[in-house]
Length: 637
Image (tube, rainbow, N blue to C red; front, side):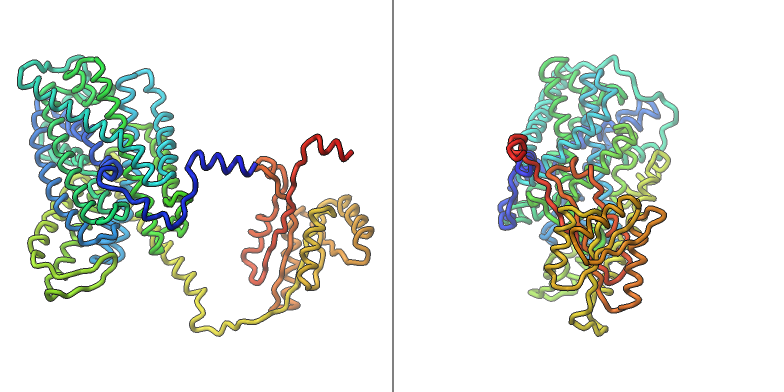
């Protein structure tokens, strides 16, 4: 049975990798684009549509404003790309906004940046998967009632692939990512050709998501701009995951980021222009990408291929979060702000706990918001723009420190080595502009989307920061309590009292007794009496088998296994305050989980009951049950 479980695990996740194989799991620029850029690239599938959704409130006559809005967002992308390339070279160990803020701004801004990014990664999975499902239901409307089930199933699939390791996930997802890039570029080329030649007909038969309900105001334009800024989510992913790249890491990461930004800008502006050319309408039943595809190709094969590729890249976008969330969570955990389990690597050298945590929370969001992209979008992007602002502000402070250094001077800081840079002023200006622009976008987004659900993130981020510091204070308190400094904690033997808990006299309890006798110390057999008939039967067996060896019977009138034993142990502690008390339990271990569930399994109950009593140790002596084949049983009879 164990062999079959092991085989199933290896089939599902692959054979275990030794720690020494970690450097060989690094990836090159081409697969890295599939892993870390899929989130940013996928946003072109819904960023233009989100702009149109807001402009629709003023009426379709104002859809032409989507073009200058897209150009403004592209300008912001250029600033962010330049800024984050500087961050990549300054902090080659990765960590992005978290490390930059911690190094230059302090612990509170660092935890704020981390909380914002972790929240954004979770929302990225929920939004991208939900948007991918929306593409599927656009092509096959009969699947719309099952959108939540499909979305959760896709998250489970992504989880399994990512548990197999970064290298395997990049290989698996490279083909869909580049398939999307090919189809998207082909759509732009064919669409532009038909537009120039006058053969591109406007789309018809689409019901707009809303009628004009408000006048066009600056506030409405800012709302549309902030919604379109979802196209910039994922830009920071490469700076967070530098350690996944092959050497030279910083150069490969920076070049990958440049390629990603160029492709993203081309696709975003191109799709916005085509949407305007075909008079695309924001709709609940058909996405803008689907409308553009129908206008350019009709309902033929290339239309379906476009939708398939878009669906795949939206699903791949979640992979960026699966690559970065566990790494960032491990950094937090290593610094003592999240549970230490998040620093453990699984059999495939990935942070398995982080992968599973991300999948679980994202699935819950998909279920709560019914896989609705429009419902999830207001929660999206505030966190990432907060991290943008903190990262760029941290870099401004870093360049100020650099300006006070001498040529040739080096200072080792958290995550990097700081050196004098003669171009520090220009780099500081770039980061400063980036910080101001992203801060303005964050405020606009928070104000314009507040009533639509952004308040959830505004409340959630400080709550997470508070939670992080609670964990940190706990770890600090534990470290102080475990420290040997300042207290005379002598090393040496202390008296030992051994108790063997006896439920019934059988092979398992005999093994526990043999274990106690093997320790070479006096021991006492104790039975908690819940049923008087069973107790009488045990006493009869005990007298026959154990002779004069005493058996202490503790009455339990309220049928509690633990309370009489706790009272008994406390009495021993009063007699011998310095003694260790060793409680030995016999237990059955079966070959399968379902069989194990058929037994009492009271070891955990006793461990929980004694967790507050100092000097009490509990040992479980298992008795393995191996079921023999029927033929062998028959032979014995």
